[in-house]
Image 1 (spheres, rainbow, N blue to C red):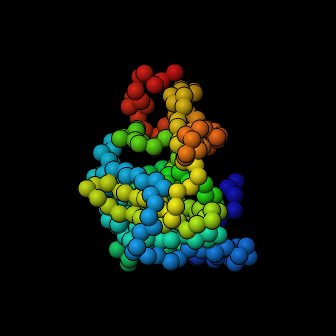
Image 2: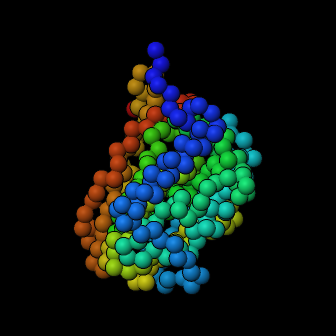
Image 3: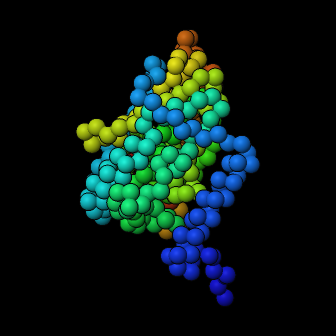
Amino acid sequence: MGGRKLMCQYGPVFYQLSLWKEGARKALKDMGQHVTLARRRQREELPVIVKGHRSPVLRRLAGVDMALQKNKETNLGLALSQIDGLVVAPGETFSFWALAGAPTARRGYREGLVIANGDLRRGVGGGLCQLANLIHYLVLHSPMEVAELHHHSDALFPDDRRRVPFGTGTSIFYPHVDYRFRNTTDQPVQLRLWLSEGDLCGELRSERPFPCRYRLVEEDAHFVNEGEAYYRVSRVYRRVIHRESGRELGRELLLRNHSRVLYDPALIPPDQLR
């Protein structure tokens, strides 16, 4: 016998009610924990670039309609326009969805790729994970605290011009699966976000340099065959380096990747298979 159906499984109206309920629950939790969400944006840039990064928006992926990739570019532009210039003061918390808002067709969002239960589907607002991934990558190069993070559990595509360690992204789903960080430092930070020549670009800025800089490294990256499935395996570390002396002060294990490969295993480079 099947289990009891969830409220969201009774139809579109109940699905939307379920989303509203989850969003309301999160808002009440924030009130109870006295979470102060960052809201103020300014055009004037803070002087110090803590970390900058850019990633290609359009990737030619096997079996993926390029029109969905183009739509992703539109979606990214809409969302980042609500976040660019944000200043997060000491003690404040950044919330992706509190700033970006609902990714609906009425607000101009288009169909892109979304991930649901490990499957790729079409969905309005698809592709926004790339923006959350970029922000998370910038934050990992600072001493700030990641307050909410939902790791992708599967390897959905082959590496294509990858510039960051695998697995350091985050899943988001409006309104309750959020990405958040808290400014635990003694100075404000600022996010700058823009699109340029087919790339998604971002900077984390501050008033003055932090005492340490950070470097992410992926080690022992390879693929393994386990039964009928293939997995991408690696370890990702964050090195903490004293800015003035260049001395390494610490090495933190961020995650152990063991991600099921959901694309054609024939695309795995033979020299990376063990």
